[in-house]
Length: 309
Image 1 (cartoon, rainbow, N blue to C red):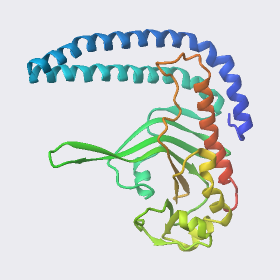
Image 2: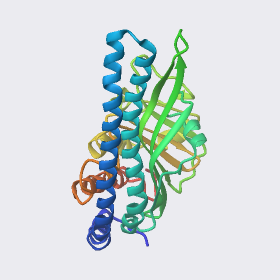
Image 3: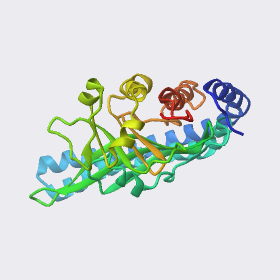
Image 4: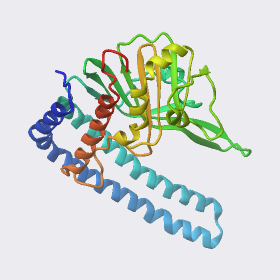
């Protein structure tokens, strides 16, 4: 089954939510309350032992034991966070296959759906060494294969004392669309940097001065780049932040695929918080809005049009 417009998706989502999701939530709510109680108990026990020990060691100047107590406090907090994350994973593993019935032939996974090397060679992103993913979706929309990946790209450095520091190159959503169009070249659209942009190919001079001011475009096929970046597409892409709520949108056209990167600090597609009842409808409505915003963006960019973009 495939849905071809937003209204179909909304209708399917409402039916699946009320008929199949809601009846499954009570068992998951029991799991949540048990996990929350356990997390609180473990944390309280850890802090009850470690905090007085740390205070005592500070008073009598026992640095080694005090350090162990401090580590114990840190571990107690980590345990709480891990139990929250584990519950969220269990919740999504149980509930997402049910929700996905509203998505037609889309499926959800917490495994990678977009090849990391393709992301790297898109040249949209700066230097990164590591990639982590959270929620990933793959399926067909308007006869086009679409992959959606909540992704963070990072790299690590060491300071003069050998301490490791992790730097984030990108955090947000990467969308890969198989357009069905033949791109013989590679066209890259990136936000202009304050100190200039690294040139991969020759810069493409476009007729829209506002677009050129906001975005740096380079390509290895100038003619194809101008064909792809029509006036209509540039106008829509400039306003993409209004559709998805991000001020940082970039893209790459390569090998018949359009890769769109939307940077955001939000934890997207979040379901299954340990701190609120899973029967609360608000997280599901937020999830619905976030998914719809991506399909609306694809519709808005008119990527599905048979001629041009």
